[in-house]
Image (cartoon, rainbow over all chains, first blue to last red; front, top):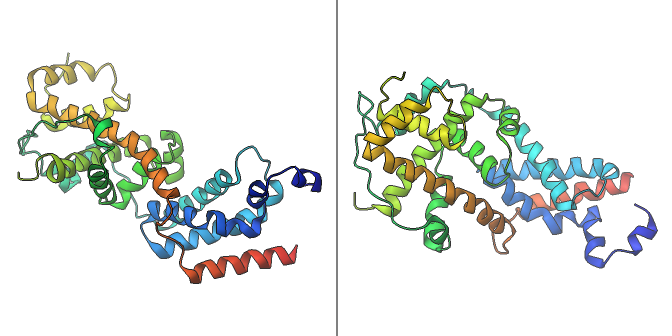
Length: 201
Length: 92
């Protein structure tokens, strides 16, 4: 970056463009982002370190089309995806494989009919999410999803990635992804029902 | 022409319908079951609720990531990263 360009920046902007200050400005944010995806402190710290290193090497090619923070997050996301790919257990399920999830399976009898009574859920989702207690409850439910379900779910939620991007990143087929979303919804439905709407059941 | 769906198969289709993935061939069976099964209609409302909440949750998680006082990098790892960045700077 030219000296003239640097002079035109505010102090805050200048800090953003100083790699030596990235750790101070974005270190904790990136760590929380990585931890949200990986749920493991050591792995999250390692991918953050890799991301900083890659960002530093690529700094000359940064074109200022986004903020530095967004750019760092995109690099970190790639590092997370690499990590997930390397450590992922083989996860290829067909749509018929849905029944292999015991948490889903136990909701139905052998004929595929509900085993349980489904009570009504009272309340407007947009109002409920404003309540801290409800927010904590649903976050706990999401965190309680197995890795294979949580990662694609969080990629959809937090990263707002398209189905194509998620499938490409995780090396799964769209059919796998629909199964993952189905299992996630079923588990979250059960978790919310048990822990919020009908705790006494 | 459609085949009778079990509640389990209906719940799978209901999930795919939320993602816009239900084919025209699958729709008649889906709707027939939807009309006659009270429990499955309720489950569909639960799925819709979860999707609505999930969209809001994405925004909440973004706020949580930026909030002061949350989890932080360990001091040891921070030192390692800072040293690495400084080393990179000095080699340029």
